[in-house]
Length: 103
Image (cartoon, helix red, strand yellow):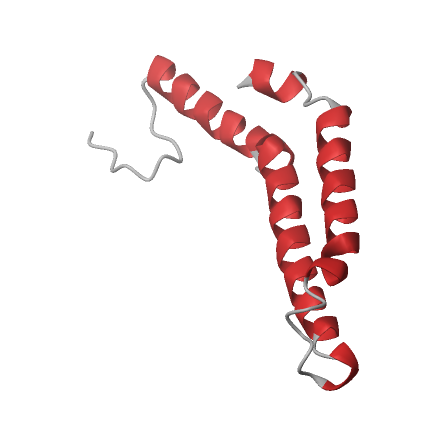
């Protein structure tokens, strides 16, 4: 997991996705213009475009977070706990692993 942590995702990929999504959502009202022709002055496009934009930008933000999972996980605490368990096993003494100690 250390190699995964130190190998970054190229910034170009995430920027390209964000730019493509922004341009696509910018032209979305032109694509749905005819579908909202029966609403007054096509006013129904505003909430529809806002909902679709929020949904797709949310998915894009979630994907960005999933690209770098170790920035949101407490990896140091996991490693410290595993290290404590290994030291406990080596020393043959009871510790904090929530297991009963039989003497």
